[in-house]
Length: 87
Image 1 (cartoon, rainbow, N blue to C red):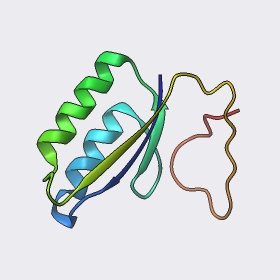
Image 2 (cartoon, one colour):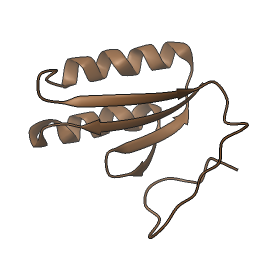
Image 3 (cartoon, one colour):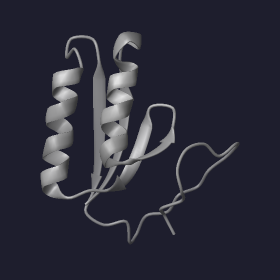
């Protein structure tokens, strides 16, 4: 599956959440990651993030795509983060 992850967490937890996300996905830009991930790795990612965030204050959103076959990606402005994954 292909995941787009977006987070908004308290300043004290940003570095920890960033480190966890980098283990599983490609950094795209501030607070945004994307990439192919297995079902088991996705479960591990969610578990680690759940332990790192404060659920009353922070949020993490996962956009889950079964395939990127019909998707497209457009960008405006300066490129940040990892490699282009969408073709």
